[in-house]
Length: 392
Ligand SMILES: *[C@@H]1O[C@H](CO)[C@@H](O)[C@H](O)[C@H]1NC(C)=O
Ligand SMILES: *[C@@H]1O[C@H](CO)[C@@H](O)[C@H](O)[C@H]1NC(C)=O
Ligand SMILES: *[C@@H]1O[C@H](CO)[C@@H](O)[C@H](O)[C@H]1NC(C)=O
Ligand SMILES: *[C@@H]1O[C@H](CO)[C@@H](O)[C@H](O)[C@H]1NC(C)=O
Ligand SMILES: *[C@@H]1O[C@H](CO)[C@@H](O)[C@H](O)[C@H]1NC(C)=O
View 1 (cartoon, protein in one colour):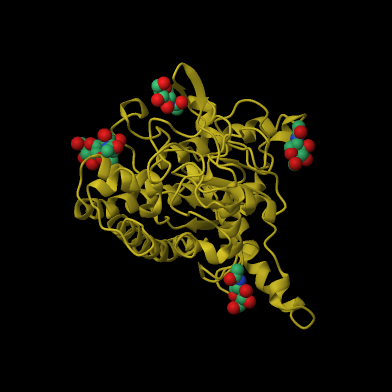
View 2: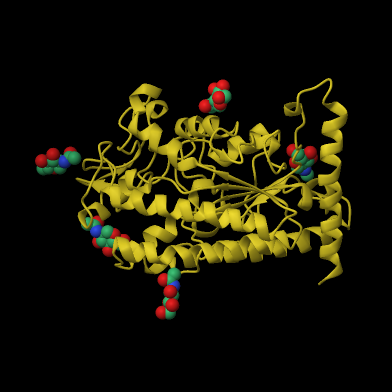
């Protein structure tokens, strides 16, 4: 094995040995909860649920009214404001993550974001231009991470402004590595014409590829992994508008049950995959976070939590779900010789769904507040304690 890897293992092992000692020293005076991991950086991998500018930098900007609620302008996010990953960064006291693919105005001193809208775990055979998905699948994102790590270290060592823009080497083993990806692999199967049972059969291979990606990061020194499961995509307008024509069964909340069934199977196998990773990579900590049940609870009990019309897009056009894939949020349409822009609803702060595919800032904040304290995590560790292996 490469000696560099041993170096990382040693640093991390030291870190893990020190933590219980610190706990011991503090325990008479302070409850264990007072110790926090102090993550100095976040490296994120995923799809549009956590894209902070990657797809925009590559294929053209997410248009207004994206960003209207928080940033006051489009910010490369598919939402009216912040995403869960933004609330994670805020909560750790770190700046919002720059997209790795963005070449202008970026600052990677506290991490980088490799997620892009439309990303899958498995490499896809159809390009974006053939109605397919993002070319930046998870394996590509890990190659980008490898490139980022070596090049940032080369430039960091040159000093000057680079020291203000790039992470130091030690940040890579102390950082939190976050993942929110998988939904597009499942919908991609349907778009290839697979049945629900056939899509389910692809899950083990999808998760094998996920494991490969996690290990690639582990062998480069990553130790703290925060993994979101996939959401109830059967409740999203873009699925309800299209795929429920093929599998029309809906539940009491109005969500497409076959699709949510696929998401649930993916999640239970993802949880098993994480258990296996814990055994194989003993120096790492893995927190599996159940985002699904919170998104589903929000949608099925929207009124109780102060939201309205959970199955209807705020920014969209036409039909039961205010969604039409040809007239997406922010796109332009000609009506009787006049150009109209597909705009936002009156009260985005009461909505769950932003554009038929993504959540509003208000919903993202609600979900973040549910998951950040560890109530829906395995082990039940809060975000700032996610460097531990078990609850205090
Ligand atoms: C891509 O095509 C190959 C060869 O037909 C197939 O084995 C593979 O499963 C396909 N990948 C996806 C994600 O559909
Ligand atoms: C990059 O961000 C960090 C943290 O916010 C800040 O301290 C640093 O000055 C920034 N670098 C530049 C060149 O603006
Ligand atoms: C559903 O989506 C597929 C793939 O994007 C597309 O070919 C098909 O026309 C859509 N069907 C409807 C009814 O929108
Ligand atoms: C467009 O013009 C037709 C014919 O004058 C009219 O019936 C229709 O309501 C107009 N559509 C809109 C959206 O104004
Ligand atoms: C998490 O659980 C604790 C203890 O049961 C409870 O006090 C707290 O309100 C819960 N937080 C959330 C966001 O559900």
